[in-house]
Image (cartoon, rainbow, N blue to C red; front, side):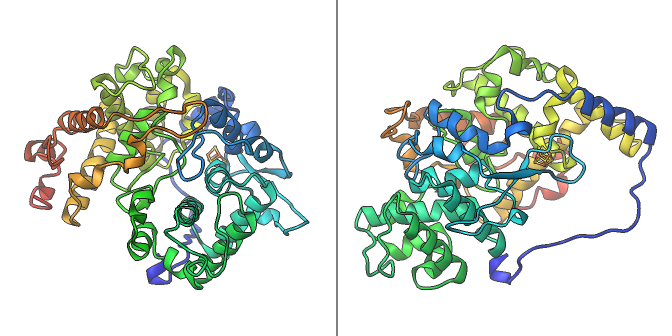
Length: 429
Ligand code: SF4
């Protein structure tokens, strides 16, 4: 978008949306609202930022460019400067928040508040526990149309480069770009937004910047397919590593529900309609985990296709998946089924894979950065790492379960035909 000078796309319509069965839609919406129960991490009452301290305690809060997994400042970050609650249009969960800060930075409630990913981006990743500064960074990114995950990640990467002498004071416009230096983080953020000096280089993205810096900078660039990793630690929930590698859009933390959800009987109870009956350990990278990943990736692909927020999907309870089928029927009038709509998710994954192949991506682009195969240097999971061989095997199993070539990840002709996607067979082959 930046290369096209495009800041946002806004869509406005004036006509009413017609649905097939208005009464059924109302009934299902009411049932959804009435049966909503706050999950254990209190998404509605406390917002996504609530998980910051929880992840720090569990040792899976990415800290200092993914070197550690717990951050002392996380407690400070959880303290609130809350002004009021906010929401996306018409949502009963209302997980958004708005904050106001007067001094030392002015933060306007109009810009909301930092979500969890933003808290980690400018907080633990940069070694900063100043919630006001993080809120200001959030406002700056929103005003400039910058993605907070990539921007915080790139500053954290530059901080590590500085501490390893890959960058010098001469490269940073005189900024002491060390972890924990709030002023330097804020200045570099502004330079990126305004494309000034070193900010102009970082604004090009993590890989072009690493290439320009040289001196092994690429080894501390935590990315997949050129996109910086979001702040979910694959060494503490290994399925997330699969998602980071397999996702067509780079390391996407919204590719599937994370491992802890299906490590308990309560979590698995929601997945019975998929034939998933037993919990799988968060550190298991065997075929059982891959199977869960395949099914749940398709389920979340379906939610993305339908425009359903994952934070609202759970309250359908044990009928989650069947509830979604009823919704689709009521909205569209289609005679559909769980089997039929899950194929939408599978089709989505296959089309995205073929698109990437056509654009020149190969199986090599599905690899994780070295850091995730190295032991964590600090936090409650200190020493934890992913076994490289186990990961490669899991990725191969994933390709096999998807009916893709186990070495290249290219969808087989028969699979594309089964999904009624024959017209894609000539692409990327
Ligand atoms: S739609 Fe999702 S993100 Fe938006 S307020 Fe509701 S729960 Fe939160």
